[in-house]
Image (tube, rainbow, N blue to C red):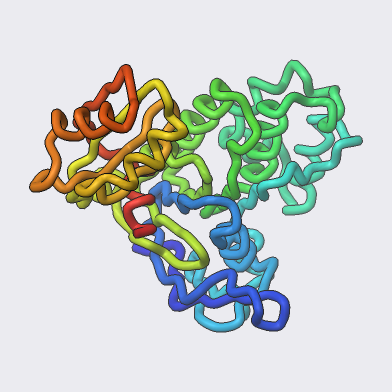
Length: 304
């Protein structure tokens, strides 16, 4: 059963000059973690603001927990938890005061729903008298999640929750989300610009320029990748990228961390012939390996 259902949603800014969403449609199944994966400016935050009743779409429909985001916006707010990309709690209130305030807003108490936030709050409880503005990035994140959960929402919307936090806190955050899903069957919609986090989701939508490129499980998207992919290195990585793109048989080439990833027409090139061509162009210490694609490779493939 779909707990979130979106149909042909469109949104624009500046009197229609900027198209933030260009007719997106998708469903979120109850009890799943659904990820919106894409770079900054892709339309993720606009979509979240519409689904959390903070913004009106130009056209299309959106239903959350059986309620229309336009007609039933007041009811929806009691059924959802929202953690925006920016830290949005009160920096001059303590950890404890923030949590108590958000519980009061939703006419509940910390004690009534403490079971939902216990595992998370226990990690920040030693700092409960500290002002929220003085917390580290990871601690702010845990407090914000606790505040979003304290009224026992049916759907949790998390807009880039791991941006700007350290790798350990990112890992801990995803572990918390999986516990919430598994222990309480909470439906979670999360956005991130980090392609590697796609593997943490049950299903994902790749979004770019206000449009969905594809929707599937992470494994399904990777399996749909049909190109031959090679990892290439040399002693001059900057020039290597330009040279790769000039060689017949190299379909695409992009920088990926310490390597370049190139899609290859194997009817034209072999590993050895590519190595020879790069050596002729003055490259040394050439390393070429056949590799499996990542979600980021798949995303780049849709850009062609």
